[in-house]
Length: 498
Image (cartoon, rainbow, N blue to C red; front, side, top):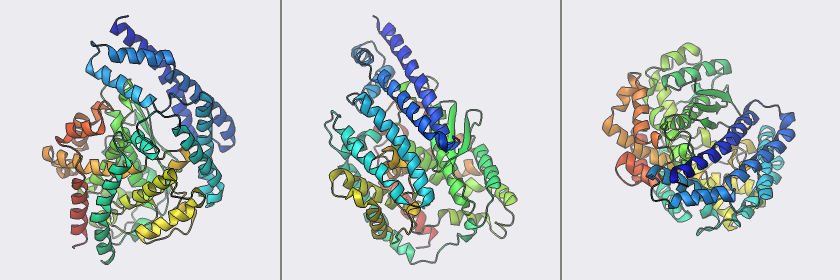
């Protein structure tokens, strides 16, 4: 066969895989948003079966042989070669796992997530603990089927962020502890910024109106996406023109929905702006977690906490909430949006303390996989870490070990990419500022210029390049975490007049 004939055969097989992915993605989305809970068992069994059928297509020996043959063809162009290379690399995570084990793990993950939600709402870790222990056990078992030069937790870290290891993350978090912890302690002695007005009663229906106004300002295409509700916000990009984002509304916490919607819109924008040439290929949505988090954190923190972001939105917000925001200026609101204080909930943490929330999870995960943490005492381990690093101790499970959904699905190794992505974003925003007056774009209602910059320098490539390659393409230099440290120290030194 010619290379073109082989490629056509490859695309036909990929179409079949994508059809399964479409159905599974839509059912997973419904499961986490609107599906009735009494139907969980029926759906879980059939979704696990469908996962198994997709697994069979992905790991079909003839399909893998086809890709390996394509990778050897000298006349295969560079883009296609990269696509095949990434797919073969990612297949190493599952290709040697028995299908029965894969299906069992899939069903356990769904049951575990539903148990987590019930436990969180009941504030009872014991309802979730048996599922988490089984997830940990099976995750370790799955690692035994991996043929990798890496071992244990390093494999999982590399799955989410190619090239990252315990050694590299230890160095990254050591820098964070050395540079930021003293600043956090220094600020703790200063007078607190008033954030009390953000905890007044903000009716859910009015919050929804504000969210749609924010999405309009961000040029979020509602013909290619939607906003729904869930227990823990997430984004599901089914295709380039089907990007589904979610949030959770708390009527006593306005900031929560605002910044979760902006964060998830950042994820969706990344996929929406992948080039048409790559939109139906494997690299449409195989970006590293650090790269994806860099785009959501860039939107959430580096843009949406600027005063200029609110020049076109604050008036609308005051019209929606005249009583709650009476006497509150735009400056008051922005100061509150940037205030720092040690708190319990990661998703609502300020930029300065946020990486410590990630450090806690990273150290616990390391301990789970090297055996230094007692998995039968995880709630106490979690609470002790919060007391050690943030000086506060969770009094209930929903504010502690049950606050995040990630472990219920076995996503060990994901959490560190949130902090790493924040570091990437600092470098991206620095590069962007050389080409654009960011505040002028935001103030003049020209958010589209920012999206265009991101598309041209990052988004259009999808996952075609490794994180290190993509950072060099966008910024002209290797990743340098000092941009992140300098950004935070400069911002909070000024905010608290140190």
